[in-house]
Length: 401
View (tube, rainbow, N blue to C red):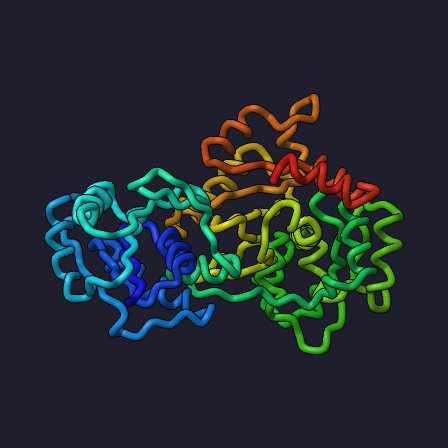
């Protein structure tokens, strides 16, 4: 007797990935719409499963094409091809979650007269379509970000970092910056630092325009740091914790991105890791790069159940109108993922999104709600950094996550 799982594939891959892990079948039948076939959902799901050593031979996989995903009859006709794959003693489970509504109805009609279990994934519960009973989805070990993203057809890379994120003294640096942060720039670069870069005159003009990221990749080998002076707002506390990490009074090249905004990503990741168990989240990463047609770097990403959560960290001032661009970017990334099981957040140090009372402006909140995005404001960052205990940190954090 073999355990067989029937999966409907249309526009969603994750419900099927999760149920395959839950049931651990011996064989899988994929019923694929034309769009699912084009996106290679079945192949990507199998590639994702291979990360946890769940490998199926070709003889244990049956893929059936459904030419018209909006035809109940077409689905039922397609299912006639699976009879040779199922023996009378096999235990068959049908997951009707991932297809179109007509596909789900067709599958239910076909299998309802047979001795099969028919289930629908609702949030984190499997609903038995015959008895209306619910059982908790059991994905063990928990679904990872890589498994989720690979199932959707992405290549995944972990961002490289030269900064000592796990060092206790370094964590004190990040917390001190979070407590005292005011503006989006801490440093003014001296002109002679540009002379240390092997770049053209045109690129030096780019530097003057503060588009520094484009030229840092061309730094001359052996340069150990960049000359600078502190911005006027930078507190003695920040200077005192940072100075021991500088070399001969120069900012190490590897710290430039950190001081211009990456510190917020480090801070957010660190606090999420510390409270992951209480928040029921897992697999937390900073700077994960996902690639399909073009690469996208996710500031912070984590899983909650089988839902991917992405966090965009913004230390800029976010002048009038720029929030529209932020939300467009978030929505574009979510659309590229093509999954319903995704949640987005924006963590911002900007005061321009606040009204006179220090609350997030209604217009910004309305736009965030439209894009199903939660804003984590500067006051949350400061409160977390100043919290006297992990218990107080959690009380702050649970209001938002």
